[in-house]
Amino acid sequence: MSSSYVPGPPSEAPVAIPRNVLRLLALVDVSTAGRRVLDELLYLSDPDTGTAEISQNEMCAELGASKPTVNRGFKELRECGLAWSLEDGLYQLHPLLTGGKVSSSVMLVPEIKAAEPERFTEQRRARFAAQVANLAATG
Image (cartoon, rainbow, N blue to C red; front, side, top):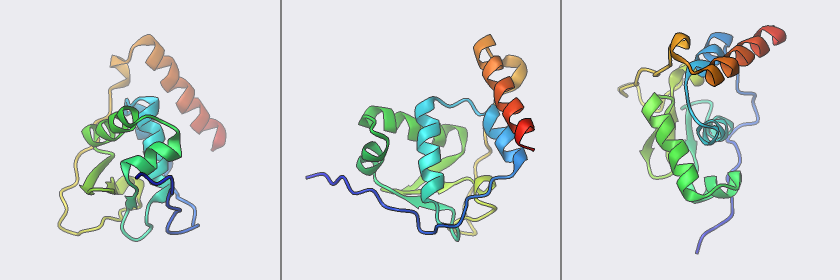
C-alpha cells in the first residue's frame, strides 16, 4: 500500500542560495525532471544538516510524475554532484546549496559537474543567456 503523504519542510526559514551558486546551477545541465526534484529537495532540506527526507513514492506524488521520471531526476542530480542518497529516502544536498551544512563532517563531497557555456547547443545557449539575464534583472 502506498501513501500519498508528502512530508513538509523541517523549517519555514527561507532557503538562501547565493548568486554565484545560482549562476553555477544555470551551468549544470539537468532535465526539467532533475530540476523539479532538486527544487523539492531544497524545499525539504533540513537547515542544520542539508539533508532532505522523502521517499521516491512521496516525490512522485508531490511532483505528479512517474517513478521513471523521478528516478531519472535523482540520477541526474547524483551524476552532476548536486545531491546524493545517504540511505533510502534520505538525500544530502551539496554544501554549496545548503550554506555549508552537511550531515557528517567526514563526508566526501563530490565536485559539481557544470558544463562550459562554449560547448552548449544553440538551444541550451539561449536558455543559459535567459537564466543569466534573469539573475541580472533581480540584482
